[in-house]
Image (cartoon, rainbow, N blue to C red):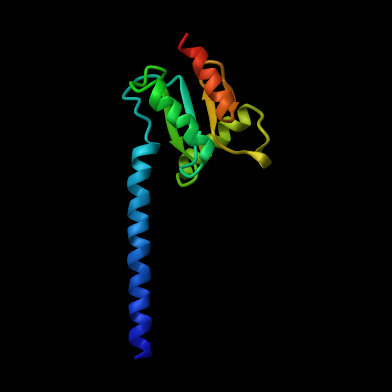
Length: 130
């Protein structure tokens, strides 16, 4: 009886882990692939999928740039290691404090500059639409 319970618990755990992993992969595909299709990306928003400050910027973009004319590519860095590595490279180029590095961060490719935090990013993006 003990072996049966242990086997059932192990199967339940593996099933839950599989479902979680598949869900994370599906979400990752939606948020981490740059939709450039040969187009130049002017800005990259590095964000975390559970970050409340990132959500504020994402909501701003959804409301104020629904067709993507600003050229902002969004890259999730909590679960995507390739995006995380790229984020650290950009943060290093901007001389950001890597010991206190957080998201959201917007990379301005034209000027090789970073903007940190929801309000500074939104303020910068507002200037791009004028």
